[in-house]
Length: 488
Image 1 (cartoon, rainbow, N blue to C red):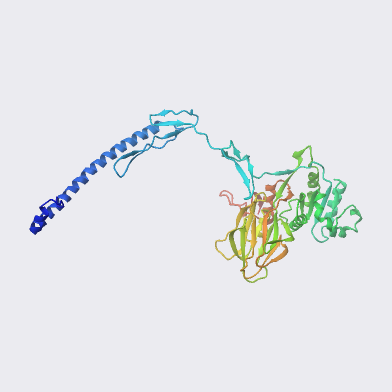
Image 2: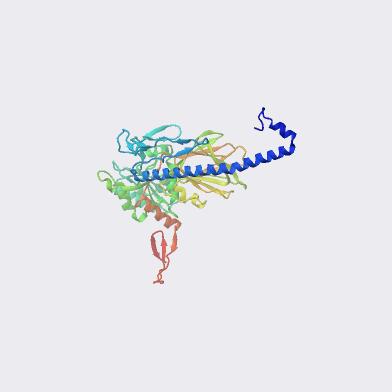
């Protein structure tokens, strides 16, 4: 009315200012007086809608409780849009198994439909190629293990062994033990005994060992073609030497503890006749009389100069490959890659890449974990890192690692393979490390787990502690060492 073009009221208001003020005040009072009334009406409408929606939801809940438990559905929702109109979702679809494919009415709202589960398969891949692996997929729809991923292995000869390589530690202190073992295998087991050339020179003057043979230096690469198994007399160093002699395939190895530590030598020399007899007589047709064997993983290491592999600089390591700062008085910088992806940079004294067998060697001294030799893993252990958050990690055996000295490094680094064959790494040089396809078969005294725990207790005194004294008897104290008790 106030703004209508044909109205005379604006003209009258302009002529009478007090009347204009009165009319404006009256309009304002009428408007704000009507607003609470409208809010009150809208509130009553909302309460009515809330009551109706609660009643509908309670009815739907009762229907859901009475529905079969083998089915699943979403609640029937009512949405109110901005325009005040009610929006209703479509009726729910009940997905059940074991029902017919035809739709059936359920309380007049939904339908039951039988649906087939999608099938899949697993493929083994290294990032470049893949092959189908179906033994872990049951029914093409879910994954299961048939058993543990690692199993105990037993060595059974299809044909009786004929040639044995006998290794001993340096010096002449073990020549009497060598004579005893060699004569027993030659006379009692009809084995041809072979020794290294330097050992052959030491025993050449002994007439009772004239049956012992040796090999030439150029035959070293073909040694695995005629040696059936290896006998080690000494400590862990002899076992590492045996691994170094066979850069490719390696025969089974049985080691007798005649060294200082002997973590890898679980056989006693006093039992060599029984152990060697069991070793040679584990033949068909009685496979259950075989001997247990641990397949110890080795690492294959290749040296690269400015990204180019160096011929003849590839070796297999049993314990670890170590990259350190050498004689430099400051920390070294080492870039670590996994399949050409930078994973971290080591700034410290160095880094170790170890096998589970080497987890009880240099790695455990650097703070690494102790790992069972049958666990398929590569240990990544920093040496004195200049970081509070750099912890050792375990990588899968499928990892392919590269340790590189960056171009901007302040100094060089040094690499060693099982503590031997040190090479200097200049800026841009690197080594590539991956799991070797040729493990070291190690003959067990009992089985791989029992031998391993006994070596932990015997060599590293693992978990030795006094037993807690019982309340009723405080006189007898016992030393508890990993399941074995000895009087203190």
